[in-house]
Image 1 (cartoon, rainbow, N blue to C red):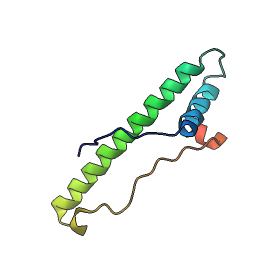
Image 2: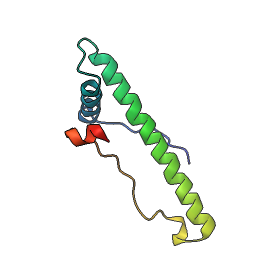
Image 3: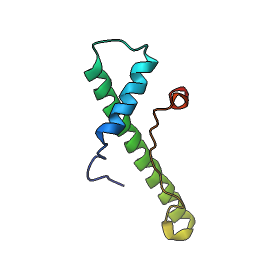
Image 4: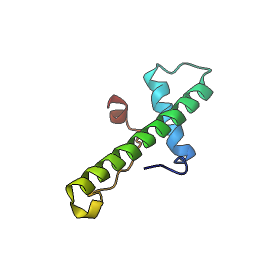
Length: 88
């Protein structure tokens, strides 16, 4: 399965992940752009992985002949700024 266009993430999504990464690294000053770009890349890589995994599962269902090849559930990406999320 090919994705025609890269998934676009909101500034809020990117900012949350950048902030979590920044906190995890001890809050160093002067690297905001680096954290922003890193967060964008992490989200895009995660999205690509999930799309590939979803396509693989769909092929498996088609090969088994179940549910006419339709995935049983949708994959979503959740980003949370809670401290618990940083530990995961």
